[in-house]
Length: 274
Picture 1 (cartoon, rainbow, N blue to C red):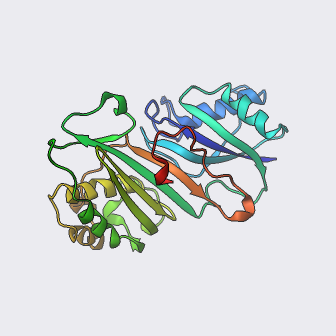
Picture 2 (cartoon, one colour; picture 1 turned 90 degrees about the horizontal axis):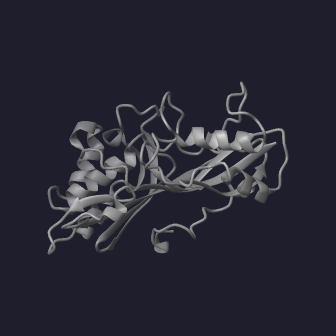
Picture 3 (cartoon, rainbow, N blue to C red; picture 1 turned 120 degrees about the vertical axis):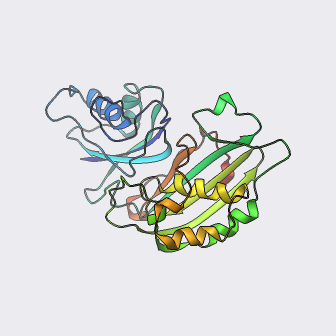
């Protein structure tokens, strides 16, 4: 049978989602935990393999990650949650589990993904958010030009070639993606970006955030974002911003699969973002 899981994790201790040689990854931790729960040794030639909705990078977090796997044993939904969690480190949690049809794919059935970037700004960084939020140093009497960033966001809504915001290591077959919405919420000393689209390129959200911040601090005009987009040239956009504040917030699927929304009760991000 095929089982889907909803996950939250703190990505700061890991080298990203995907299995890598001699690296600690979230995929490895989850597959070992599931295998242990169903009684398969981690060294077995056929351990449980999971398919994920989105392969997050090193240091990137998730509030609404979704995975699926195929297994020959049956358990109650809550038993999957409690059982797998008992084998996971504190930085990874299964929030829900349910059987799904064989037509469901955590990756290919998804039609929408939402990322949130949390940024702390001010004269001093906060040690409490060092791995949970990005940081920009601003003098006590300064703040970002929120209106300029919102104007810049308008040119990104729709279907475009996002090559200018694409990592050189990106494996996507096409740089053409559809952006549905970009919301920017200011709550000093916090700034939040909520970016929703059908799919994203490698480092795309972090490259967008870096470019928005260039506009927000007055180094670039709001019109510059359209110039960067149209150039299809990564070298003219802002440098890739820190992974610390990036959260995979939600994955959307067709209603027929009845996938639960992310569990946000234990998220420290403002509920207004959801």
